[in-house]
Amino acid sequence: MAAGTRSARSRVTLIFLLLTSATLLTLDARDFEPLGRTEEALVDFLSPLRDRLDDLFDPVGDGWAGFTGYDDLEDENQSLREQLQQLRGQQILESDAAARLEALLAQVGLPYVQDIPNVVAEVITANVGNFDRYSVQINRGSADGLRHGMPVVTRGGLVGRIDGDPQQGYARVTLITDPEFEVGVLVVGTDDVALAAGGGDGEPLRVQTGLEIDTAVEVGDQVVTSGLDRSRYPPGIPVGTVSELDVDDARLQQLLAVEPSANPSGLSFVTVLLYDPLAEQP
Amino acid sequence: MSSRGDYARSGLVVLTVLVLHLALFSDLRVLGIAPEVPLALAITAGLVGGSQRGAVAGFVIGLGIDLYLPTLLGLSAFIYAVWGYSVGLLQERIFRSAWWINTGVTALATVVGLLTYALFGELLGETNLYTDHLYSVMGVAAAYSLLLSLPMLWLWRWSWPSLRRQEP
Image 1 (cartoon, helix red, strand yellow):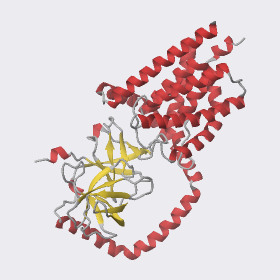
Image 2 (cartoon, rainbow over the protein chains, first blue to last red; image 1 turned 180 degrees about the horizontal axis):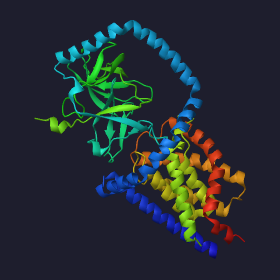
Image 3 (cartoon, rainbow over the protein chains, first blue to last red; image 1 turned 120 degrees about the vertical axis):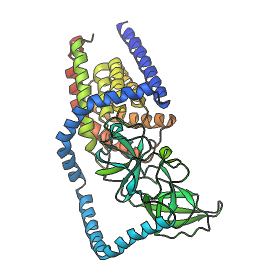
């Protein structure tokens, strides 16, 4: 009898909790503002404790990463040494390439992005769970002027965008590798605006629409953000380099694989461009 | 009956383990995969406290971790409450409380919990949950749950001493 009552009570509790979860899911899906503010307040309440523990356990995390990734680190070291040798030899060519990119951007009427106000942020957690591998958290938020959709770059180029409404001192960045990530791009020297999408971990970006079959594109061409048609990204941010070319005969379009110019894995610091496309409209 | 002390201790356990997960465990990755500490904590709550406590603890833990995930708020709370309840129900009706059974059940429930999380999330329109990566996550997370289940079971027994007094 007592067991039956207990069982009925726990069933009622479960139903109540599931209904509460379903309500929260619905409200969050509809971007219910008070819920977002409550979330933010809770995270802010916990953040001092979390920050202190982060500082305390950072050496443990670093030690673990060194221990579990020792072989990878050795391989990476070797590969970096080889790259350094090559880069020393190509230094002059590389500086010329940067100037060439700037000149090409000027030629097609695209400004260089360095004049846009920006905020430098530190990547504080790569990710908390196992299903958010295409996002990172940074230590700047709404208090620093960050807003949803702002582009995030490194010296190499575009690495992602601010995702969702940032909290006061934190923001989430969706990385360029996310298959859901889309950005309007231009192959420097052409007029076709194409759409590039993330290709997944360690994979190049894919350009599958927008590039006519007769547009002259070659492997090695630079790809930058187009900044056209109310794009959330300013024009001229380097996105990557064309690494593969293919043709879709049915749609008479070219398909490109674009190797990102900025490495989105192992980020430590990033720059958020405080760019508001609506404010840029005349 | 739950005492005020039970609530206070279990609240402390949930808060401490969540913050530890954010600051430490999420960095202890093998093959790029972190332990699913919050899910394992919800499952062990069910194993120690039964279906009702398992459901409530699962809901609270899930809500706590939802604050830090890019997925919809309430998704983890929903799944963890279901698994806290289900494991608790099985424990009340079927299992013996041998440590090795509890450990094995935690690992197995972690696998099934992750699968339901991914499927339910995809059903709600979340992306990148049900991918090939999921199977690696299930394997590594289950191994971690095997290791972490015993300290977690101990933590729950410590936080709910009133349960021991109720035993015949």
